[in-house]
View 1 (cartoon, rainbow, N blue to C red):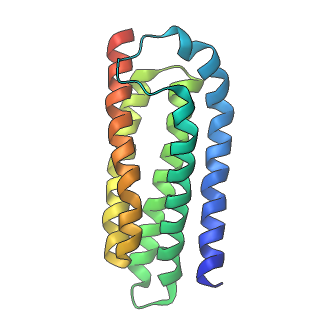
View 2 (view 1 turned 60 degrees about the horizontal axis):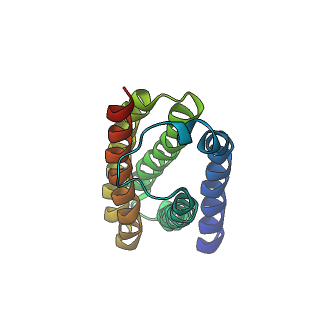
Length: 159
């Protein structure tokens, strides 16, 4: 498989995760989420879809570039990095279920801290294999940092 096919496979995979997460998220955004207190820095709802779509595409490109190195001397590093990539992607999807599906900001807060740690570890591992892939993970890490503060604030305001 060539580099561009690997990138395409992972971009599509990431967007599929986004789609399935949105099936849990959308109904709650229009109902439950409108009824809870949110901090003054809560972004408008329309902003989340384009930001997350961009981040998922960047994630897929980063993953594809790292995956492309699977036949290099860094094979074991690549396998480990891709395992972390898969774990963080699964945790990313799980957060939507915990926060919007179960409507449980506290459980989602605990989970998003784990997600942040996995994203950070993935970033470190990716940067060692392909610097550009590491750079592609920085906006994701920053956004999830913001999302963690937002999640904590929502939990605090609604406990």
